[in-house]
Length: 184
Image (cartoon, rainbow, N blue to C red; front, side, top):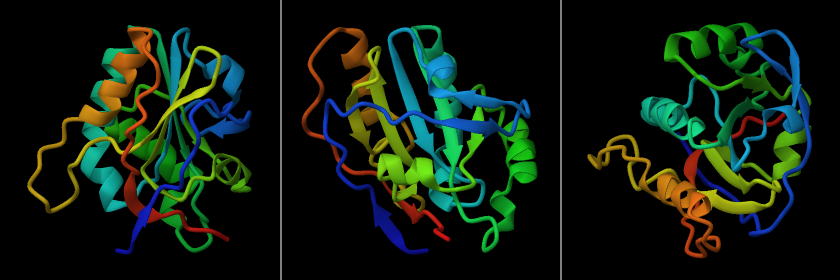
């Protein structure tokens, strides 16, 4: 597995809009209806990536905890399903059900949304404030498959706690690391 780092995404950047198929409900959903009252977390993930598999349980825990605090959560898969059919919509739906995803799992068939966010890897994690301005784009925590550091979600949790406390965005943000998005 080739390691890919997330690209910089400047603090204050407005979240690019989207309207994508939610593989869980079968409906198209847009950013305006998915955003949280106090903030919005957007995760670029996929079904098969070992880095995502490694953190899936923590993504679910965080969403269950922070949704109650006003943070909206959205997951998007942008992988090329011709080369990686296991990341297609039918598999996404069953994967979301098996993992207990409490958030929509959207399919970016054209990969235009991933490009708009300059997403490069899975997981690629973003946090936006109530006005959909970027406050965090970085790693979940220091844990990686095989490095024996427990998954805690510390970095992303700190960013959400900071946002909820009304503080300025954290400027020291370590990039996320994972598998590269499978481009067409």
